[in-house]
Image (cartoon, rainbow, N blue to C red; front, side, top):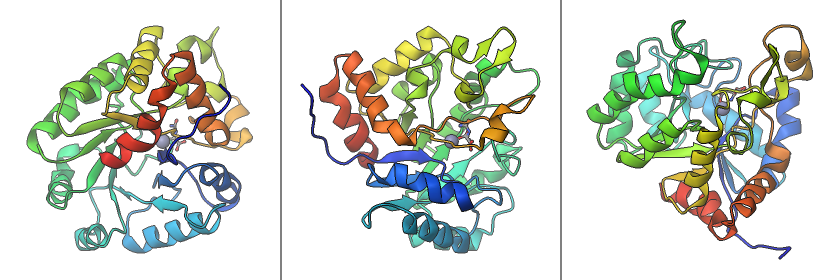
Length: 299
Ligand code: NCD
Ligand code: ZN
């Protein structure tokens, strides 16, 4: 077999950035996808209707295809203008909200310190039937970098789930067996899975006290057992998982300097190819379309 045909995919987690980078990278995502969720962690985060309209316009005008759509979530903070936020949800300017716990990842310094402070926002999302996208990592000094997802689930996500039973939540870039299990066993929650979390383990990132900057991302890739669990979740017909690359380009200067490189893996130029190769390795090519083009829109 050298050809397969699938419904046009969507990528539910992409970083387009701004300026020069945006104009270079947008064509890679729009060459293949029908829609992309454009992450709002720009240098000045996207928090208002005006900024969202503008960002959508810039991305779409740099895309390869006229039909390509960028969908914008609001970067949630505890100082949002609630009136504008509600207006933007009602008018589909924001498709939902993105929760970045404070300092969990690149450009998340505006994120939320005390998640309880934005429970009023979750209530609005739930009422309006809009999605909550979650970077599910708890970043605290006493928590090992490999355990951040587990701690976030235990200390925050269970509570959010229980308080807002009808709120649709996407646990983004699920990176652990623990995360897979949480998505599978809770209602109204789905997960996106990146190609790199199904290709790399921590040995590919940390070698003799050195970090391979090109494999360094958040959440950090984990153990073989996590990789296997993620492959199973993506490939074997579980309707709760779908495509989200977390393609996150950085300038080489920010990757190759001494010290901790910026986190993020740029996979947009070969994203569907990477997924297809993984599904082929798992003898599950017939399930690729479900993951890339059906489960996400359904959710
Ligand atoms: C992303 C980025 O560079 O903006 N980095 C990453 O490692 N994935 C932010 C994010 O999605 O965590
Ligand atoms: Zn991301």
